[in-house]
Length: 217
Image 1 (cartoon, rainbow, N blue to C red):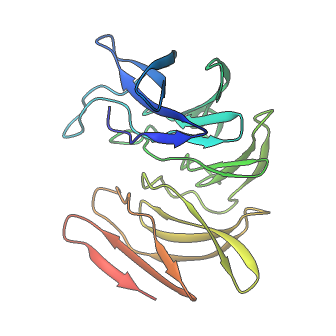
Image 2: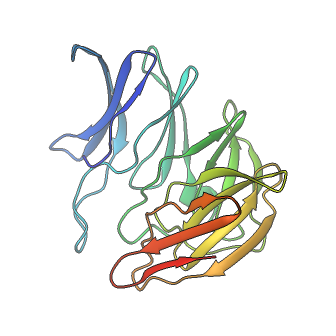
C-alpha cells in the first residue's frame, strides 16, 4: 500500500493489500515481530493514473485505531486486539460520490469526535462519535468534494478550528459545531489537494500540484 506507518505505545501499525484486493491492518512490535493482522475489506484497484493499494495512514488514539479506506469506509479497530469494532460507509451515509482517485486521508480525532472528509451533500466534513458512529455535526451548506487531504487542528484567536484542503480550496471549520468559519477558492484541475495547510501566528500557507503553486494569507 501507500500509507505511512504509525507508531504508538510500542506498536507499529501499517496497512497493506493482498492479491485479491483485500485490505489489512497490520500490527508489529518495535523489533518487527508480527502481533496481528486484521482484514477490513476491499481496497482500491487501479483506475486511470491512480495506482492500486491502501491509502490513508492509520490514526491511533488511546485504545482505538481509525482508518479510511480507498472506497471511503471509516473502519474503527481495537488497538490492542485488532478486531474491527465498527465500519461506517461515508459515501453512502453522506451521499458522496466515489473519489476519482480513491479516498485518501488520515482522520483527525479530537476527544470524542472523529473528523473526516466524505465530500457529500452538506457534508464536506463530518464529525462522528468515536464509540457509536453517530453524526455529531456536518458542514451544512458546504458540499465540496474531498481533496484527499488530512485535516489539522489549530488554535486561532481563542477558537479551535479544523483546517483542510477540499477539491476547490481551503476551508476552516469550528471543531465544536461544524460551522464553516471561512473558505477560500484555490482550485486544482484534478481536485486532488493532499498537502495540509500550514498555520502559524494567524497566517495560512497552502500549496498544490500540477502547476497550481502556493498562496499565503
